[in-house]
Image 1 (cartoon, helix red, strand yellow):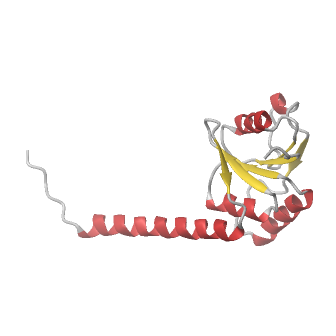
Image 2 (cartoon, rainbow, N blue to C red; image 1 turned 30 degrees about the horizontal axis):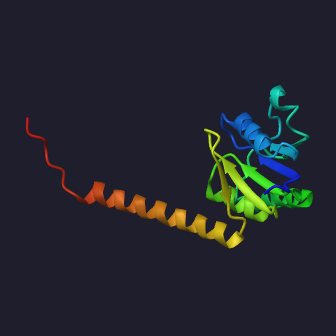
Length: 157
């Protein structure tokens, strides 16, 4: 994607925010990078030259349960019309956020600098969230059955 002009890097708590911004800047050196960080976040001075704009969110943490605040955040991101939306992790919630932002492309950057594209289709993100939730619940149920129902034999000494 060579015609990327505006990139949004969405902060998630973790140690590799600087690495994510640098990875994106290396991939798209001429693009304007905007970071969205939580209210009161101490922005690293080493990144000031790589970032054109720093947007502080109204809340420190957003949740799907807080629909009003989440929708305001999405509306503000959509208004900026980013070409690329970048997250620091691959989670169902961040995939849904990436799909709702209206960006033409989305990606996430792994801790080691690996760059992976995320589908920007809302239905794909919703399917991923539902599927991961079902797999998680099925795994929990299976473990519960194994722990509660299978007999444990004492080890012979």
